[in-house]
Length: 125
Image 1 (cartoon, rainbow, N blue to C red):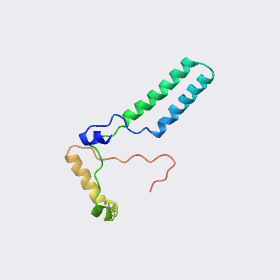
Image 2 (tube, helix red, strand yellow):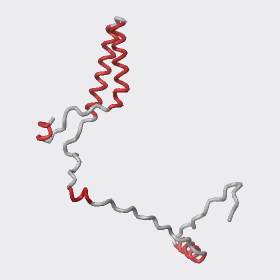
Image 3 (cartoon, helix red, strand yellow):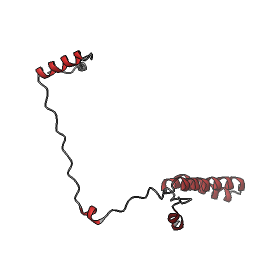
Image 4 (cartoon, rainbow, N blue to C red):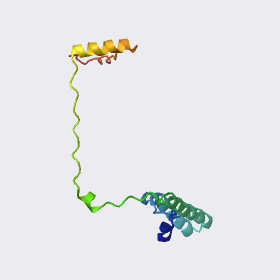
């Protein structure tokens, strides 16, 4: 695998996802049970399916050499995290501002924005 990284090629196989064993494990157990019950054809089919599943998963999870994460420098690692910016809420518009906005939208040929109706059983302001 180190040889492939030097050449800039992707490795043929990657790590097997742990959740893949949730499907491959029972298949292998069934293969062992078939051997115990002397059903050799079923054992071969179950074992081949389990191995094929693991190989496909390893092939899908192979890494990409070009997309390796960049190395973090020590200076950057020592910088504190930025504080999150607080969302500044817009102040409610006055009646005059709402009237002006409605007039502008009518001049531009757009219908004014309508508020949804109050749901039944809910008090209005």
